[in-house]
Length: 331
Length: 266
Ligand SMILES: Nc1ncnc2c1ncn2[C@@H]1O[C@H](COP(=O)(O)OP(=O)(O)O)[C@@H](O)[C@H]1O
Ligand SMILES: [Mg+2]
Image (cartoon, rainbow over all chains, first blue to last red; front, side):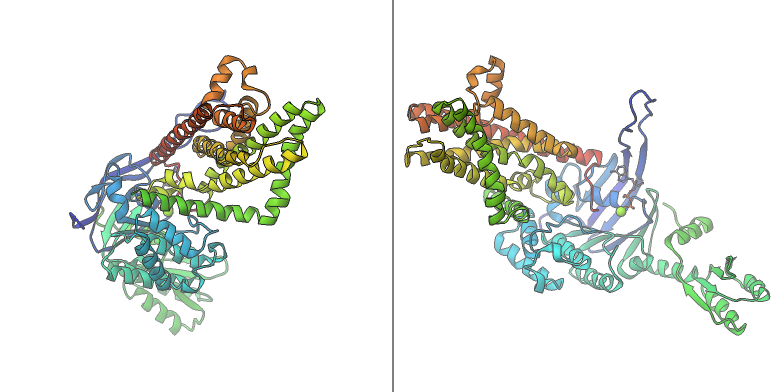
């Protein structure tokens, strides 16, 4: 490695707007001004080398747009993005060998080639010498548990296998920065768990990882720091433990067959943010404080309610809480 | 650098041949594709028989057999946009190597198949139509057929680059180009029957010069230097086309980076 910047990713005031393709209405009908949509709105973010950085946000937040810009596939409308000190717009020849990118979903593999052929192909595209490419290919196939099927065509693979092959593909060029865009979407829980194990190994190797997700548990489990993004704006960067705290603080309790008098008492428990009752008499208690859900649960159990459960809040709910309570250091 | 490039071309070609194998087996290539090719060339050669002209029969047979190499090479127009369907384009742009290299290599299966079927059509049908190709000298034309296929392939790459932006046109463009080349490059009628401007156009397109060289060799009426000149011209047309095609692919990648039209994942 020649020059080494301590920052794997440095993004300043990065904005990307998309202009909607012209409408296909006949020209006679009024031409509308082109509609533009801001996918990233002046975001500023740094990721130090060696960090696993999470980008947490709901659908349409702008996560993929940032991944595209950092992997040189998309040019920003304004602002600067650098990878290990190299500008992603002009210094593509410097940036590309340093970055591996893995997308959620199955596309992008040559399904009529075997797993090994795919990896050899991409290792050539990442300019690895043949012998090194063959060696890395064999190692990656083994590491990702694809060894036995290595010489079978990819079209016969399950979704989880294709996703692992994608990860191997992203790693075949030995990248210093690995960009994983929603890598576990569509995987079954066991496959997702294996995938997370791999991410931990990669972190231990000292690679920098930028991982996007809309799954708070995943962000909490895997990341050193997590940046929250919504509608193209960053809401702040947090310690993953904070996310864990939110998950338990805003836990929801659902129960059936709760007497009205007990519901009133639950409403009065400190930290209960709200109680909703649906048409079938099921109640959902939203909590906003550590230990609140435990207090609610014990009240319910003492009141003889047996049909109850707790669940973690969705990302959207957490965002609502955060924006409502100003609990975030927006910036 | 050069060996890196060749290796990428080889893998891209392997992916193209893998596509090809899902379309044909050796057997269906022979019974399906080759049979169709033989029928097509025979159809045109029969016109010469119909007007009872051995010279014109020979003219049509050679012209249409060589045209097969061009026709198959032009499948590159459609198959270039297959690369988009695999979803690999953004990943290729993100990779250090050039997208153009992959697109240049991923359709060479047509070139190989086209050269083979054109050659077989020429040598299998000649005896049936009473055309004496004067073997073994005639075997010299096999590399020339490959050259015509190659220059047409390079020209097809230019069109493939355009069709990448307008996927719905991929078959129309290939077919129209094929019909135009068939008409103006001396396959059915001598180029000299066309108005000057059309002759000039034909001269900068593939097939024209290569076919002239092939006719020259087979008739044994053309001097060696003249044959060589035609071969050189065909090679120049091919090389220039390749240059334009590579520029086109690079522009496709750059404009995609700007517009965001390059789809990412599913
Ligand atoms: N190529 C594009 N053309 C137009 N709009 C786009 C394009 N790509 C993304 N967008 C819009 O930008 C916003 C952010 O998209 P994206 O980055 O894909 O979000 P995420 O990955 O977080 O779900 C969305 O509103 C999306 O519709
Ligand atoms: Mg996305």
